[in-house]
Amino acid sequence: MKNKTVIYLLALAAFLIGTIEYIITGIIQMVATDLSVSTSVAGLLVTSFALSAAIGAPIVIALTINFDRKKILLSMLIIFILSNFITFFSHSFEMVLFTRILQGLSGGIAIVVAMAVATRLVENEKRGSAIGIILMGLSSSLVVGVPLGTFLSEIMGWRGLFVLIGLITIIPLLAVYRSVPAIKEQEPVTIGMQLSILKDKRIVLAVAVTLFYVGGYSTLFTYLTPFLQASANLTIAEISGILLLAGICSFIGSSIGGIAADKKGPKFTIFTGLILQILMLILLALIGGNLVGIIAVIMIWMIATWSTSPAQQLYLVTLVPKSPDIALSVNTSFIQFGFALGSGLGGLVIMDTSVLNLSWVSAGTVVLALLMTLMLVAFERISSSKTLMEKC
Image (cartoon, rainbow, N blue to C red; front, side, top):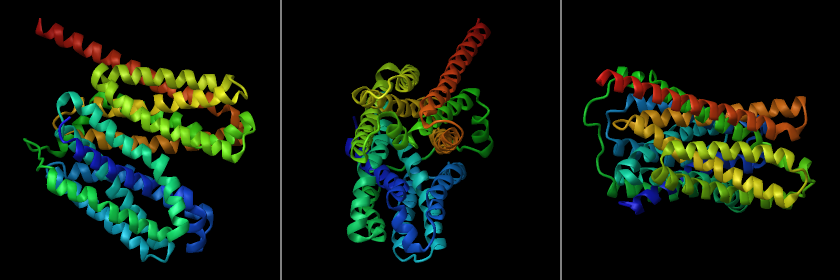
């Protein structure tokens, strides 16, 4: 693979951005106490990051589509670094909330542009692997970034952690400055051309797949701790070990998905991932309190879920090869919306029924993603048949 070092440094940037996004969940009590707000109010620091990334990133990317992608990436990394430094001096909840919005916007744009840049730095047959490497960086923030960041926050304070991450982000910033060439669209892309992308039924169906499979994942994973406690009466130490294994499997899944998308094609990888997710979620509902079985099923489920993401991103890149940033940014927004959908749906399930029903609801949501995928394939075949008939 060409430019492998640069790709891994872009993955480091994704890791640092992901850590900043998810770290609040690990230090929320510390932050709430320090800022003199309730835990529920402190939770807005998670929501504000996600919403600014989901809503703001596609708008900014659309408005800057004809700009040099290298300059956009550099600008967003600089804003991300500065926002982390500003957090150190923020002593009111409102100021920290403002910095979270900046972090979500700049971080969300940086990850999307990094993936788009990565696909242009490697050979065509390695684009899925390049996306997978960057997503590995993002997923590893859950495995390494959050627990390590929580530990360091106890030592240096939560504000010091933000400064540390800001300083480390200078490394990928310098790598982009020195090693990434100027990347601009060969032909100008108008707003009308960008909006026309959303008229493509394939893209609409593809992002619907993202919404439902991420929603299905989030429905269970958000409440995995109470689910495991109810399923097998596990201790917190045992649950922590399972969560660590789940995080490692998400890292492995991102890598496998990228490689499989390159070798077998994105649609094959998406189908395989979705079917495995559904089977594992159903099995999880039926397996009872068998601890070894529960761990094995969760590991396969996590690998299947995270292997779907790079394949899905690569598929969208192939649909819009000239300006992949737009399709990737829209897909990233639907990932964030999927997390919101799943956590809300899971909350309703817990309120109205048993926590043990989460895996059934999660499986049903992923079935919707599989149906969207079948519709996508059917639509492509019908379109191909019409094209052949017109040529004849």
